[in-house]
Every structure is written in C-alpha cells, then in structure tokens.
Image 1: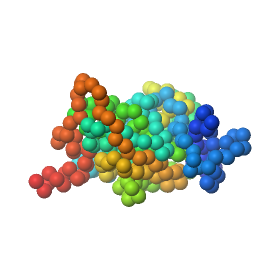
Image 2: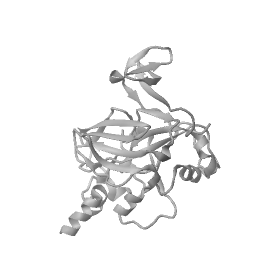
Image 3: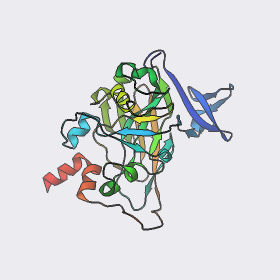
Image 4: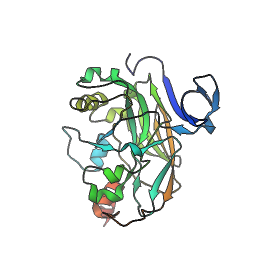
Length: 284
C-alpha cells in the first residue's frame, strides 16, 4: 500500500524508563506497545527514524529560487547532513556564542521504508515509510568557507530536528508547510510549489545510491528563511502531519581558534537575510 493511501497512521518515539519506545498518540496520551500510557506533555521525544544518511536538496521551492534571483533549475543538487545533526521534538537548537545567523528552514522530511535502488518515479510512493516536519537549521556564518557542501553551515550537532512523529495515510501533495517564530507565521508554502517533487527526488537519488529503511530525505524550504534569536520558539508545521517545536539556546563558542571562523560578509548576509538583504542594498 502506498504511503498516501489508507487511514492516517502516526508513530512517535520517546525515551521511557531509560529505553527508546515506539508509541501511538491518543489525544493527550501516548500509548506504549505493552498498553501503558504516558502523558504527552511529559514525554521525552527521540527522532522517529534511524537513518544511515540524511540527504537534502538545494533551492527546491520556486519562491526560494525567486528570492535569491536564481535562474530556473533544470536538475537538482544535493548535500548531506551528518547523523549527529539529528534532534527531536522539543529539543534545543544551539547557537554558538560567536555566531549570529542561525536560520530556520521548515521542510517536509521523507523517511524511507524499504531498500530503494533503481526505482522509477511512478513506484516511489511505495518505498516511503512516512513523512515528518523537519527544520534544516543552518549557521549561515560559515557560508564563506563551506562552498556548496554545507558541512559546517548545516552539519553542526542538533541541526536536524524532526518530529514529533512519522505519519502515513496523508496525501502530502495537498499539504502546506508553515514555520512559526514565537507563534507568528514566517514561512508559508504549498508542497505543490516544489520544483522537483518527492518521487522525482527519490528516483534521481536511487539511480546510484541505495536508500535504506530509516534514511531521511529533506525536500526543500520555501522563501523567507531568516535568523533565529536566543530564546525563540520555532515550530515547523506540515498540515495533516504534525507540528515540530524547538527552542533556541546559546552555547559557548569553540574553545580553540583553529580553521575558518564565522564571518558576516555580504555573501553570508545575502543568504541569511534573503529578500531583506536585497531590500537593504536597494535602500543603500
């Protein structure tokens, strides 16, 4: 059965009595497999997948492409986030004290359900375990050194919160993606705005790369990614799927001054501030 078909089904993963447990939401409770329940408000969430890789696509919403005045895309490009970026619902997002451009990027996360290699677009939905809201957090302060790899921009610990759960039985093509900062909508885009849809992305990747159960694919963000401030509550909502919540905190800068440090060049600010940077330049 395709991930789009059937009744809505959601699984979450929490830490309970020292061990990871898969649970089903039931109103204000989460039900464990043995029948016991936990108050949702008291749950300590874990990421609802165990990927061997996290693969992300660049500039996949037309609103984002237009914001950066980029040409029409004819083929997608990708980057990877380390597995240590995984974070969960209600987890903390850590901004190093020497950074100032910690951006949110609300996205739909696609979790692979079975081994996928040389699969066509028309079959791709059958290989998906489910969907989840994801925040592709990035410290844009490192844009000057990472070129297209995004390693330090997008690869820092905890920079890939996902959750609360993984959901199937929802036609994601009809969903909308919204990001909120302290309750105010800051990103809003229809999933149908993607330049390369989810089946295209999966079919493209699995021509040469075997996608394994639990692997996480991030499908892009709409316009208006902007920096978050310490103390901000950031939420990513995918209609019909769920709402991911995280809070920004400050952590110390690295102890040792080695390698390229954070910068605030025009190139960094252009990406971090998006359309706001262009407005600043036009006013100047």
